[in-house]
Amino acid sequence: MKLRYEMTPQMKDYDSVGESFRPYLMRFDNANKSFGAVSTNCQGFRNSVDRNGCTIDHAKAFSDKANPFCIMLGSSAVFGVGATSDATSMPSFMNTLRHDETWLNFGGRAYNSTQELLLLTLHLKAKPKHIVVFSGVNNLTLAYLAEKTSGIYNSFFGESICFITIKINF
Image (cartoon, rainbow, N blue to C red; front, side, top):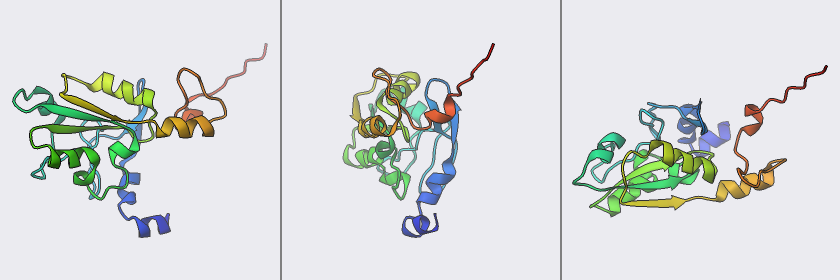
């Protein structure tokens, strides 16, 4: 870890965010965390930053009829793992390019596409102008790493700690 933090000091912030178990999603990033390289909102989503450098409030973006919001959905790449600040994640970068829209970060670290869709379904409170899906790498990775992969659900990171087999002898 020492070499990792020497080469990429921002990764210490990512490691400090932590996670908690959530219904249906299995895990999600802890809420209300703030470090130099990464911060999360009250629900655990990574904060997006607008073109003026201000943090975007998801609830306000959902209810602002004058300024359409958009969503970038995906896993770690969308979340922005490794970015040096919230302003350098992909959704925040879109906010600097698209001045007529507000882009929200719907990235879930270590998520497969099923978890990403559930995240969107559970947390979407209004109709977005656009949804960009940047997904699939974890599905492919997990298909090769898992001992058994469901043809319906695929596998997910950390599933071995979520399932305990109980053998009952009579």
